[in-house]
Amino acid sequence: MISALRLIGLGGAIAYRALFNWTTPAMFVGTLLAGPLFQLLFFAYLGRQLGVADDRFYIVGNAVLAASLACVFGGTMAVANERRYGTLGHVLLSPRSRTVLFLGRALPYAANGLLVAAVTLAGGALLLRLRVPLAALPGLALALAAGSLACAFFGLLLGALGLRFKDVWLVSNVAVAVLLLLTGVNVPAQTLPAGLRAIGSLLPITHAAEAARVLAAGDGLAAAMPSIGRELAVAGAYAVAAATLLRLFEVESRRRATLDTL
Amino acid sequence: MIAVGALLHTKHLSRSVFEITIALVVPVVQASLAVYLFRAGTEPHRMLEAAVGAGLMGVWSSVLFGSGGAIQNQRWQGTLEMLMLAPRPAVLVILPITLATGLTGTYAVAATLLWGWLLYGIPLDFARPLAFAVAVPGCILALGMFGLLLAATFVLMRNANALTNTLEYPIWLVSGMLVPISVLPGWTGPIAAVLPTTWGARAVRQAVTGGAVWPSLGICLAVSVLCLGLGTLALTYVERRARAAATLALA
Image 1 (cartoon, helix red, strand yellow):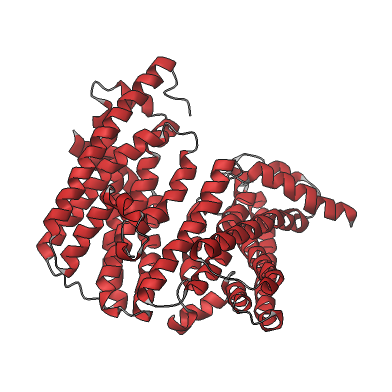
Image 2: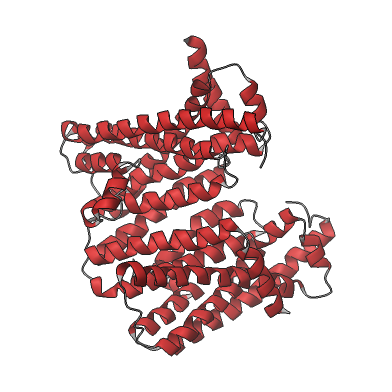
C-alpha cells in the first residue's frame, strides 16, 4: 500500500517534472495563467455585448474551464511524451501496476489545473469586479478540484490514444476546442441542441461549472453537491476508460512491436 | 519569387494533417460557438458577421502560430541555413512563409462560411460582395506582412512560444473580430488602432454589413507595410547576429 502511494506521489511528481513541457516560468505564466484570463475576458465582453448572460456566468465558467488546458494537455503529455522521448519502453518494462503508474500521473496535473483555475477565478473577479461570497470558497475549491480531476483523467485518456495514433496533439487541440463549445461554460446549456447538451453532460467541466455557478451565486454547498457528484462520476468513468485503453494499447503495441514507432 | 515561394509554402503547409485539421475544425467549433451565442443573445441578425468573425479569428491563429514560429520551424527542419544561403535578401525568403500562413488561414474563413450556410442556414448575402472578395485577400496579405514582424521578433525571444500562446485571445478581443471595440475599456483603443488585424477585421465586416470598406482596408495595408519594414530591419539584424555568432542553426 505504501509502495503504491509512493509510486503515485513520488512517481507522479517526477513524471510531471520530466514530461510537462510548460513548467518554465514564462510558459507557465504565459500559457496557463495569462492565456485563460484573456479567454475569460474575451467571453465576458462578448457575453456583455450580446446580453446572453452576466459577468458571473462567464467568470466562474471560464475559471473552471481554465483547468482544462493544463489537465488535458498535461495528461496527454504524461503518456505521449514518454513515447516522444524514447522512454516508454523503459517505463513499460517496470513490473509495477500500469493502472497505479499512469493514473497517479494525473494527480499533479489535477493539482496544477486547480491552481490555474483558482488564479483565473481570482484574476477574473478582480478585473471585472465580481464579489464571490467568502462562505462559498471551500465549495468552489471542491468544484474546481472535481473539474480538474475529471479533466486530468480525460487528458490521460487522450494520452492513451497516443500509444496508438501518430498525432495525439491534434486530438488534444480539437478536444480543448470542443470543451469550449459543449460544456456550457460560454454558451448557456439550454440554448444548445439536445444532442450537443447530452454530449456535453458526458464531458469533464460541465457539471463542475454548474456547481461553481451555484456556489458563486451563494446557494450553498448542499445545492452544489449533486453537480459535484456527477463531475466526480465523470472523472471516475474517464479514469477507468484511460486505464483500460492504456492496458489495451500496451498489449497491442507489444504484439505489433510498435511501442516506440512514431 | 514571393508568389512562387508563398505557393510552395502553402502547398507544404497544406500537406500537414495537423495544420489542415486545426485550420478547419477549430474555427468551425468557434463559429458554432459564435452562432449559438449570437442566437441566444440580442443580435441574432448578425449571424453572418459571427461566421466571418470566427473565420478571421482562425486566420489570426494561423498567422500567429505559423509566422511566430516560422524561423524556428525552418531551423527544426534543418532548412534554415539553406534558405539563408540563397543569394536573395532574407526578407524575400521568409515573407513567402508568413504569407503562406495567412493563405492557409483562408481555409478557416471558407470553413466557417460553408459550415454556417450548410448547418445553420446562414445566407451568404454580403452587402458588398465585390468588396468582400477584395477585403479578405487584402486582409490576408496584410496579416502575412504583419507575420514577418512576428517571425523576426519572436526568434529573438527565448520564450516566444509562451508569448504566442498568450496572444491569441487578446488580439481577437482588441481587434474587434467578434466583440465590438466600443464595448472595451477606452485604453484599448490606441492598441487597437495600431494593429492591422483591427483594420482588416473592420474592412471585412464592413463588406459584410455595408460601409466604407476601402479606407479601412487602406489603413490595414499601410500599417502592414510599416510592419513589413520593421520586420525587414529586425530580420536583417537577426541574420547578421546569427551569422556573426555562428548560431543560425542553434535554438
